[in-house]
Image 1 (tube, one colour):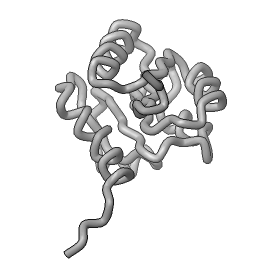
Image 2: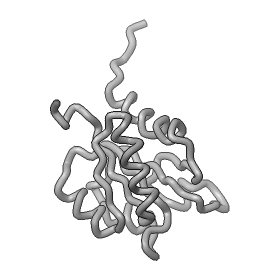
Image 3: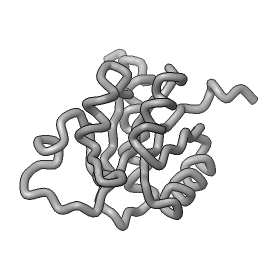
Length: 131
């Protein structure tokens, strides 16, 4: 099987158990997962893989934030960015974390997360319907 047929998801989470669980869940659904437990590791993976479809990231990453990660990614930022966080935002998370496409609260349900990852996938592969 070619790995290229599966969308690649970059998961950034500093909690080892959560990262392992995320990786297993997504791989079980046919995604190729790049796991990073730090911003540095995430940037390294992003610089060596140009096929990353979605970024799923925690807000707090080893004393730093998703805001820093997204900013540091620059134009290597994947098309779809899902913030997976237990943080309660005062306003719209999209305003507080520029560059994210959606927000999933922790503790999360896998289906809810998959919805946010798949919505972008469906849009990018959908053909315009005639009629």
